[in-house]
Image (cartoon, rainbow, N blue to C red; front, side, top):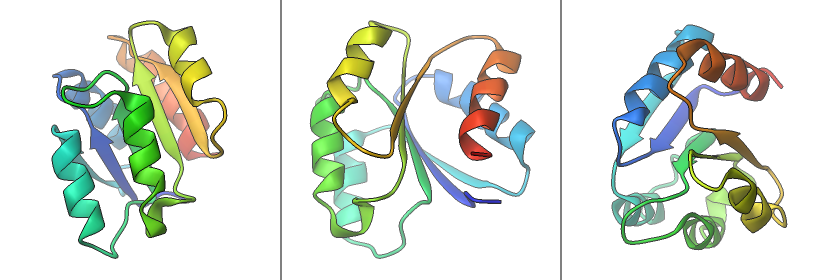
Length: 126
């Protein structure tokens, strides 16, 4: 198993569906939900214990996804951590906004557990 600790940053109820999909892919994965991107930045700046993979809702309150990504990448231990943006809005715009970064993927937010699980399997098992 490549990813043992996953951080999910999302302020919506969609995070519960994504967490269910993560457990469907592999029950051994430890996943944590945070709903405030600014608090996540503060916590990650104060630790050396980083997640193996980060899922981020692109449209968060207080900070947009591309700015959040830049701030995450400025944290020494997070420069090479893979990040997955997921969004239901303007999927192509999100892909274009983050395409210059390495180790960044984008998936569509969906309300279908089997589709989300399929997308996650492709990412987690790559």
